Image (cartoon, rainbow over all chains, first blue to last red; front, side, top):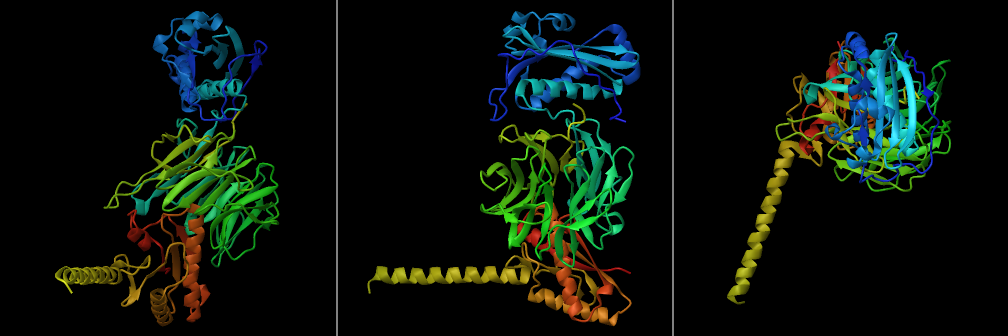
Length: 446
Length: 161
C-alpha cells in the first residue's frame, strides 16, 4: 500500500548551480552546516481536511520536524531552533528576508507549504542559499495524506542530494529482528520500520525463531532464516501480501541468505553433515547452483553490486577470514590478513569497499576494507557488535550491539546502531523493543 | 654463611612453596570445578538421558573436536541407544556468543555432526539421529564470562520421540 502512492515531481524553477553551498561528506564533518527549516505553511482549510483524514492539526509543521530530525541525524547539518526564526512561514516561502536568516547564522533555509487538493496532500518546498541570497532548489509533489511522514523523508533526500551531490537515504526502511524475553529464551519477530524508527510493523508473531532478514533490491521481498517446525530454512517473504515461501528443497539447514543485486537470485549457505557451502537459487526457474565445495565452513556470502563477484567468510585457513571469488565460484582469494578473525563481509553499493565484523582480543569491531583487502579501517570497537548493512548510498552502516551481562547474568540487551563511513556520527537507532540483524532497504522513491 | 644469606634463602624457599601451593590449588579448582583448558568439565547444566548417561558434550572455543571426556559421554549414549532401539534422538549443536551469528550457526551444525559421527562409529544408525544447530541463539547460561561461554559451547542429545 505504501508503494501505491502518486509522486508527481515538477520543477518550479530551473536549478541555479553556481557557487552555492556544498557539503563535503567524504570526511567526518566536525562543523555541521547551520540550516533553518521553516515550518511548512498549511492554510486553515487544508488543516481541516488533514485533521479529518490523518488526525493531524498542523501536518506542515510536523513534516518540517521530520526533515529537521533527519538532517540532524545525518551529522552533516545543524538545524537551528525554530524559536529564533523571525519571519512567518508563508511569507518566507514567497520571499525570504535573507538578512533575518543570516542574523541567526543560517546558511541554508528550507521553506514550503502543504495544501489539500481533492483529498490529496500537495507539498511544495524551496531551498535557499542565505548568504548568496539565491534559491537553490524548488520542487512540488502530490501524494496520499497517509504518506505524510514519507513526504518529510523525500524532502530530506532532495536537500541532501542538492547539498552533498550524492543520493540520500532517508526515504528508506529497515527490516530487523525485534527481540524480547530472557537471554536464554529470546522471542524473536521480524519487524520493519521507517529509517527514523517510526511506522513499526511486526511481520511474524514470534512463534518460531527468525534471524537475518535482508531486503531485496526491489523492496517488495525479504529473505530470512526461520525455524518454522524446527527446520531452519531460508524463506522468502512478500512484505506487501505477507506470503511466505521456503527457498528450495534442501535436506538440511539453509542460512545466511542475501539477494543478488538484480533481485533474481538468493545466495546462501547450505549445511550438511557438518559442512557448510555456498549455493545460489534462481527465483524464476528454481535452479540451484553450488558455488563453493570445500570441507571448511563457507558462509555469509554477499554479491558485488555488478553481480560479478562474491565475498564470503570461510575458516579454510583454520580461522574465520574474508575471501572473494568470481560469481561462479572460481578464483577464490583470501583478502583479510590483519590480526584476529573476520566475518560478515558485505559489499558496498558503491562497489569499492567491503564492510565486515572483526574479532580481536575479546573485542568486536565494525570496519571497512577495499575489495583487495587493503586500506582496512576500523570504525567502532565494542564488547559485541556485528553484521553491518549499508545505507543505499554507501555512506552509513547500520549494525547491532549486544551488552555484557553482570555477574548474575542480568542486563542483556540488543540494540541497533549506525555510524558513518568516516567513523564519525555513531548513534543508536531507537527501536520500541530490543533489536538485531538490521538490513537497510534501497530508496523507496526518487 | 652469614645470617642475611640464610634469611634470604629461607625467604626464597617460602616464596617457592607459596607459589607451588597456589598453582596446585588453582589447578585443583579448575579440574574438579569447571574448566580444562577452556572446555567445560562441570555438571551444572548437564541432564541425564538415563542413569549415568549425560545428555551433552562440551567444546573448546571455535573447536568441533571431541575431547576424551566427550567421547566417553557419547559411548554411554551409544550404549543407551543400543539398549533402547525404539528411541530416536536430535543432536542440538550450539555456540557461545563470542562469534558472528551466521558462522555460529555453521559451527553448531558441525559440533552436532561430530557427535553424530561418533555415535555412528558405535553402530547407531544415522536414521535414528537428526541434527539441528541453534548457533548462539539458545545459551543455557546468560553470563558474559569464559565459564558461561564454556557451558554454551555444546552438543545436546535430546529424545525425539
